View 1 (cartoon, rainbow, N blue to C red):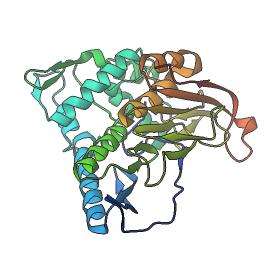
View 2: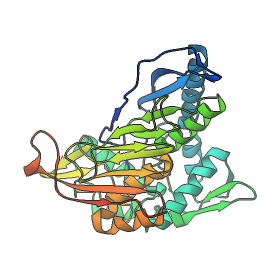
View 3: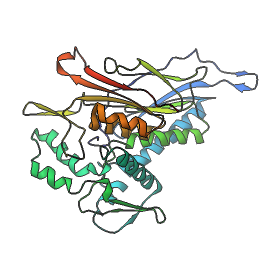
View 4: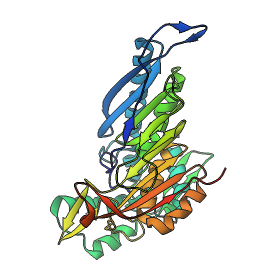
Length: 345
């Protein structure tokens, strides 16, 4: 589970964009599309959109709409903004049901589904524990067990009650706080893809801090070619994707050393303890919301237990590597890896 929405650590996925020389004009009745690329800071990370359009005005308008959509979602989901809808809802915890936006209702509903399927290894109510470990990263002092036990009283997706008819959410326990660090960027990337499609752009790639969502393939190609992190997996060096998503989770950058022990920014919601197992996970799924959340869940579950996730989520593939300090050689190398093939359709 990522500790916060803007800075959940990802091992950056290299996107191999191999294109023929761009050209314009028409071949028969089929228009030739040109490649355009735009970038902007969204949700505290670099957001990048690569798309194919007939001309620059169409491309620019489509990208602008997609970035605006992601910024809108940041205002809904951020735990760094006291005025975000998620934080306003969290402030009502222990109180009556609250009518929420369609965006917030949909992501909470999906998060509860994934929490149930992952045996609570993924849980958006982890916010109180996130706050504890965020302070630990700032101070270099491990939270006390008493503080962890107290925070855990307000953690648990089973304490979220959703009413479909009234579109309300009730946080049943006091001091609950929602945290979308393990799912928010994926959800935003999915919504950006929808926005681009409404603007007439379907050949596109959205990269939101390492959470990648692709639509139809690049012009003149059969798929987007994505490179997995080197030396981290026994999986293929690259994967070809169309209308799918990929996310990677790990602690290569975001961690804290306390008393000689390395604690990840990823927290096990069930124990309240930041991970120390040094896993690196890559997930391919039909959508970025699922890929993002499963990367967090698989990190918590570890190689053996995570195998069931790929079975419960058809079309998903998961690769897990266990990092070793003695096998780094300038990066993180695996002591062992467990690749999970895509389930048969």
